[in-house]
Image 1 (cartoon, chains in turn brown, purple):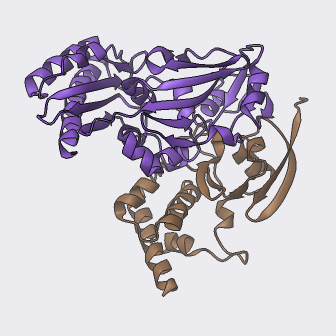
Image 2 (cartoon, one colour):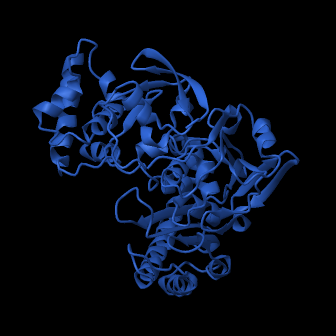
Image 3 (cartoon, chains in turn green, purple):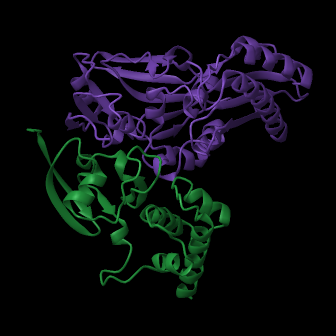
Length: 163
Length: 292
């Protein structure tokens, strides 16, 4: 099929990535299939489940509800960009392991992005704030309790680091 | 769940958008936050031939609080609107409604104008626009015209916007009466989801507690979000006692034609409408009493 291609340059996890994309290619498909950043998951593909959440210019958004061409000139952080460049887990990621904040792992990238966005602006969140922040992310393993615990643990650990 | 093919153009100004729309081509669609349009394209409920992206037009992103109205640029993100304290002080009902709109991730991208232009009958912001009778500024290559919200919504996903027009600005009337209160609520299956029924009200009281101004509305399931100016007029001069509120709300619920679907039948929705509208009129009245 001969679809018109559009040039796109996006900073992904600190690195500029340039490519040509058909207009209808969703941002999440571009991240996964062309950049092979498969940490971001595709769930419902219509903005309900939150598994595809990424940060666009520092704010969490759904990458299934944007076309890759729209990201031209913007900065993206995916779940791969949360940890250190040496492959070390971030405090939040490690807290998810510690508190059993994941079971099947499908919702995890979205949960991590949503929680990290919360901690960036609210270092000491209440349980209600945590639940509100992950309210747009579905976990079908019913593991919300442990996810909330994991975010609380991360907040405590981050506060201790700062002292 | 992939969109059909389309051509894409990123507009850098409103004039450029109007130029694209000049021929009134129905196959051209504007994309703002895309939180409703992109799912519809993914499900192939709509398949525009060309998408004009208005996300990078800075002139469409602003909040200006003036004495009689708050002006918002159509492409201002819902999160920006929700976090604006001076806007919330002038027109509290907008922030009260946004607490029910989607989630962090969708409000970061979704825009105030997009919600109105999309005109989902169960959405929150169109209901607020109806209750306050917000003024919508539409621009085409020929110039601008202003349409009142009460004339803007024509049906589910249908508005008075012509194919050659772009929603540019929304003016939200400020009620300058000192004792003005408002309230918004809804019932949905999950928080952040579309409302089965949403209800909201705004009232002003005089020093003696008598109602001098009132507006209320209902949304969810019907054709458009509804407001009831004739019924609200019956509240004027009263102290919003239970008897008058009940009688007005019962008449509103009877006019409200919610229809039924697999999420909730019409009878349940009408019952909810009466309960929620009563609560919101009372809550708005309580809110107004607190202000001096």
